[in-house]
Figure 1 (tube, rainbow, N blue to C red):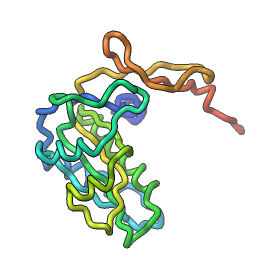
Figure 2: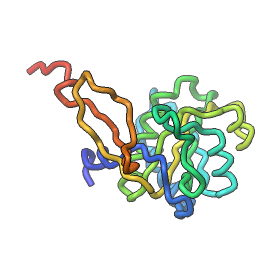
Figure 3: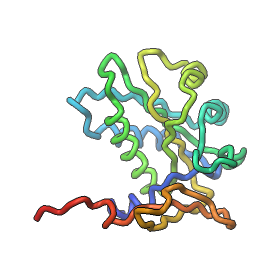
Length: 193
């Protein structure tokens, strides 16, 4: 696939086939792809914790918050939760400013996930203190993002909207997840040619 197609396919999926197996080898390959991403001053402060074990997945899930715009939805139910996670950490001994590196790495991983026919959701709404305790993460590492991964069990569609329309994602009566996106003409500020 080419980048525009992968980008459209890489949505924030929030319901998965929970018992779908994502191998440790597959998770490590995703981390290896992220290893080649650009890094500010080439400091490479990111570290990755990968997990595909149900017991630990449940612990990680308990530290996450899902879909803030869907106020009456508590998140994926048992059976539709992620099959694996990649937790992105920032090593503070290398840098205290690693958010941009994390964003670049997370998007790169998510594009690779989409190319593999899987889906995921980047989660920043985390109980970091509880997650640190549950996974025994040293204070040397900031917990930046959790990438929830799996085989999607939902369909997500993109709706083109005008600049005055709401950007809040929503679900229709058929449980189809809609993601509003502004039109190109509304985001392209200026062309100097």
